[in-house]
Image (cartoon, rainbow, N blue to C red; front, side, top):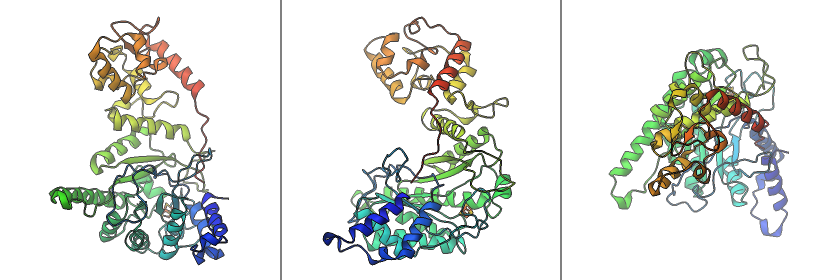
Amino acid sequence: MGKAMEMVSGLIADSGKESNRGVPAFIHRPDLVRKVAILAESARYDVSCSSSGSKAVRQGATLGAPAHSGICHSWAADGRCISLLKILYTNVCEYNCAYCVNRGDNDLPRTTFTVGQLVDLTLNFYRRNYIEGLFLSSAVCRNPDWTMERMVRVAEDLRRVHGFGGYIHLKVIPGSAPELIQRAGLAADRLSVNIELPSEASLRSLAPQKTRDGVLLPMLRISEMIGEATQDRRRLPARTANGPVFAPAGQTTQLIVGASPEPDRQILRLAEALYGRFGLKRVYYSGYVPVSRDNRLPALSGPPLLREHRLYQADWLLRYYGFQSAELFDDQHEWLDEQLDPKAAWALRHPDLFPVEVNRAPLEQLLRIPGIGVRSARRIIAARRFGPLHPEDLKKLGVVMKRARFFVTAGGKFWQSETWNPARAETVLRGLEKRGAPRMKQLSFW
Ligand code: SF4
């Protein structure tokens, strides 16, 4: 049974108890229970939700807050609680994107909530501590505005009628009117527009009803509206500066990896441009899950999870380690090496930059050493103010020596009997990756 269905069953069970007279009547209606089952299942392939980092306190909210709860809203197969009601408003779709289980041509049960049903469901799950917020996406029923308007009303009713202060993530349907995007941002913590495919050519081939501009334009609007709201708040006197906010947890997007032929270089260049131009909080990479039969799609036996993992690592390098995507690739290396993490692969292609002396290197240089993360780099900088570091100090500062030992010296000395030998480093690091390789398996969201 899917988790959303378990939650519905919990509500039904609670309704029999003396102390739970408030359980809504709708939950006894089998048609609505069926809707939850269908629309929660239909939402499972959207990965663009996670902790928001939102600290916004909604004025007038009387129920819930997004700040402390963490917003990974689902249940993973390993038992971790990630409490999000992740659901579609409708899975009736006018479009026919080849990679999507909800495409119009697929023969599957279809249904649509009403605004009131979804609001009731969210509130009841929330009050029972089943969820900490709502991630609402949708297929395109009738047209983008029809669908988006209903999704926005769900968020507005939750906020304004019911004083809901919990986390809301709304998916923006490309092609929606700017007024609807504006309303969505005033009600939701986070907005996202899924770019889905990395090039115009792939969109034309696999999602012919979508265009690159149709996706990028709402992203641009959202980033402008976030910027304007921030400026407006800065202009307000401090006492009134907690007026309405626009998407305080920012915007994200999702890119499907492996359904189209673009190499990693192109994917990361696009992600970098999206971070730079639209101030995206996150780009999510979703390994294509072969759910549809279509001769335009590659024949994969399963989702390319290792590739997805490497893209997330490289994305991390762009956001926190000062790398640019162009540094990770060249004409001979358009794909990330699946057997090496991207930082180690970069370091091994630049032997002239190593070894690095940790007593002298600036933060930016320390961050480029495999085995040294942001925290350990900062600790090195702080610790060396008190005296020179020795190789044996590095482990205590959080440096992962099984990786870093090839690339660093402290006081001119390598750790243990190591020497600078890039070929040996590569052999050992590839071996480490093989031994430590996680057994890649798609997590169940339900
Ligand atoms: S618009 Fe495309 S990706 Fe979205 S639900 Fe419809 S078919 Fe799927």
